[in-house]
Image (cartoon, rainbow, N blue to C red; front, top):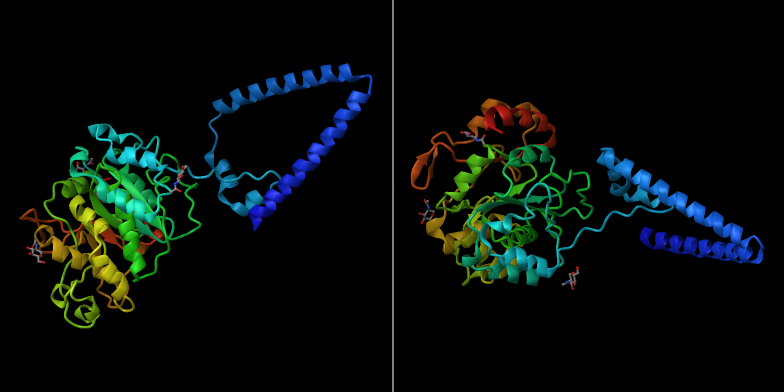
Length: 420
Ligand SMILES: *[C@@H]1O[C@H](CO)[C@@H](O)[C@H](O)[C@H]1NC(C)=O
Ligand SMILES: *[C@@H]1O[C@H](CO)[C@@H](O)[C@H](O)[C@H]1NC(C)=O
Ligand SMILES: *[C@@H]1O[C@H](CO)[C@@H](O)[C@H](O)[C@H]1NC(C)=O
């Protein structure tokens, strides 16, 4: 509505301007002072050029505040009230060809281009889902980059309230990670994120997500497909907007890239909240014995990610038969990994979640509950965990859920406890 009105107004204005111009010119021609006017015109144009040049030089030297620019591009209601609307810049769209270059360019570690903080690469594209999944599943093992990157995939409702924490976490580790954001918010804009932030322009083409619905799994697969396009990504971790890291980047990076396992929570739960959600119609593709449950917050390697994106066996069955009160997001990956990769899964999640207060949602931590002692404690389960066949103190690398109000405290403890 607004858009079409604007363009209408625009063309009206243009028309009337054009008419004025016509009248003006004809008048000048009629007068004998035509040549005098010509001289005046030239002088004016020359003056305009000079002024423009001086202003240009000045503006370049002044370090301006990007906030001024944000105002004009952020709010559509603001900009539409201007007579000459400052439209938000259309997001740069990566064409198919660009994507192929990123995906298959195997000039080894040169592939870091565009991943630095200085010049962020836009991950938005206009591929259809079919093209995307086909492309993602076609990238061969031999084209993979030697420098392993970890793909941090954020599945969010909107903005990241803890963005500042994550920005600090990633700082100084450019080239070792990539970020992908799937947000169901159709009005998501990241113009208020500094261009130097690793979170800037990392939104992938996203769709609406319903809690506990199969659309949640679809979003996870979409994130994986987009992340697989970058042949540098070796490990893939799914996070939400309320997740925090529990260690510094180097610790988490080395834990993941040196691991022999994937981390998908897999267990068999008798009763209505587990086996009870199995639907007989899923047989024979998925039988009752193979039905598994687990937290959706996974960390997987490239082989498992590829299997999920290319899966045409299990996912269609889930889409058809895992509907109300089934919660695909808690069963799809657990079941798939249990069937396809039993040997290489650690069978546990790397994301700590507090389910101690029964109910469908885990506990959310607010500012008051964040202490250094608490953050240290949630890293292990008391008795520790097995990592690459050896006992390790660290069970969890991430934790949830934390609200935006706890940001200042998390930043404070990030330095003292988590080491970044
Ligand atoms: C994607 O956009 C490019 C131009 O940016 C265009 O040439 C191409 O046809 C588009 N592809 C699809 C599938 O829309
Ligand atoms: C990260 O933390 C570990 C210990 O937790 C520490 O040994 C290491 O120096 C830290 N790395 C950086 C880059 O600060
Ligand atoms: C995970 O569970 C599978 C069975 O689903 C088992 O074969 C495998 O050994 C377990 N992995 C570890 C690391 O314990």
